[in-house]
Image: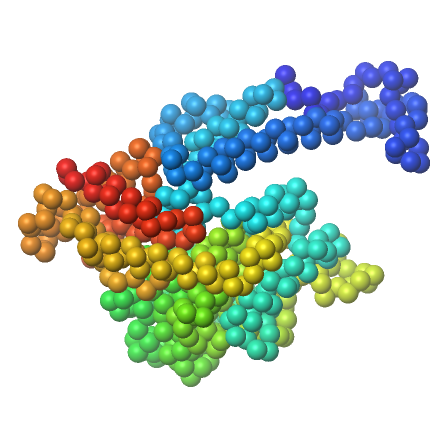
Length: 527
C-alpha cells in the first residue's frame, strides 16, 4: 500500500470536505471541486504524517550515518558485489508505493551498504570526515529546496555566496576584487576557465560558433586533472589541441618546456589561448611553479588558470600558502572547499580576477522569465545569468556556516594539522621494513609501496616492479572485503602500483595511521 502521507480524495463526500475562506486556520464547510476526479480544494498531503516520517528518518540518519559511520570500531564498508547488492536492495520501481516501515528500512539499507567516507579510516579520496556545521547546512539547503538564479527566490543564499567568494578572493590576493560562482565540482570550474579563456580571446565564437575560428590551443601539464581534456572535447576545441607539458620528477610543470610548446604552436599557425597550472595534483600532490608560469603567460598574453581544487586550502595557512606563490597573478582559480576544508559535497568555487562582468557576458542568455530588468529590487543580485546552469544549488552556504562556526584560525589549524599528520606518516613509512616512499610528500598526499617479505631480496629492476605491481590491488581487495579501511592505489608513469594515502580529517589520529601500516602488512605479508 502507498504511504499515508499523500492521498487522492476521489469520492470524498462534499459535506465531509473542508475549504479555507480567508484565514486558513479557520476551516469552513464548502462543496468539493473536482477536475479529472481529483478534489482540488484541500491538500492531499498529510503534513503531520510527513513530519513524523522525517523525524524517524532523521533518527536513522543520526544513528547509522553519523554515530556509527564515524565510529572507528565499525566497518568502513560492508562490501557486496553488484549482483549481491541488487538482490539485497530490491531496486525495482513498481506501480504501488511501499509502507512507511519498508521505506524506513530502505533508508537503513542505503546507509549500511554505502561506503562510510566519514569514517576515521577512510583515506581513499581527496575528501573525508564528518563536518557537522556543513552537514547541518546541507540539511537546511535540501529542506528549503531553492535555486540560486535570482535574489527573489534565494535572497539569503545569494548574499552568503557573495560574501564567501569575496573572502576567498581576498585569500587569493586579488586586491581589486573579482567575480565568480559556486558550481557542481572542480571539473565544471575547469570547464568555465577554458570557456572564459576562449571568449576573452575570441568573443565572436559565442554567436557565430567555431566554423570560422583559428585552431585554438590549451596547455596543461601531464599531471593535470583529466577535466581539461574533457572541457576541450565538450567545447569543440578538441583533445588533440590540448598540449601536454612534461612535468619534472616531483610532478611539477616545467616552465621552459611550456614556453617551447607555445612557440611551436604559434609556428604551426595555431592560437594559444590558455595555460592550466595545478596547485595540488591528484596523485602526487604537486604544485606547479605559478610565478614562473605567470611570467610566460604575460609574455604571450595567455589566460592563466590554476586548478587549486585540492591545494587551494593551503591559502588558509600562513605556514603553507607559499605553495601557491604567485597565485595573485592568475586570471582564474578553481577551489573545492569540500576537499581539505571538509565542507559537504559538493562545494566548489570558480573565481576570476575580473571586474568587467566577463562571466555575465560570456554566458548570458537574458531569459526574460527570470532576469527581468524592471524588478522592484537591485537586479545586480540576480547572478544566475553568469552560470551555464539554470537551477543551481546554494552550495556556498555549506562553507559559510562552517566558516562562521569555526573561524579562519580553526580552518587554518585544520590544514596545518592535516599536513603535520602526513609528515608523521611519511616518517613512519621510512622507519618500517618493507615500506618505501615514492617521494617525500609536498602536501597531504603520501605515496608509498609495500614490499612483502617474499620480494624483499629482489634487486630494484623489472622483475621486482612486475611482481610489486600486483601487490596493491590484492591488499586493496582484502581491506575492502574485511571493511577495515580504504586506501587508494594507482600506477604512475613507469612506476608499479603504489598506495596513495590522503590525510584530511581531524578525526584521524596518529593511532589510525599506525593501524593503516600495520593492516597493510597483515594483509600483504604472505603475498
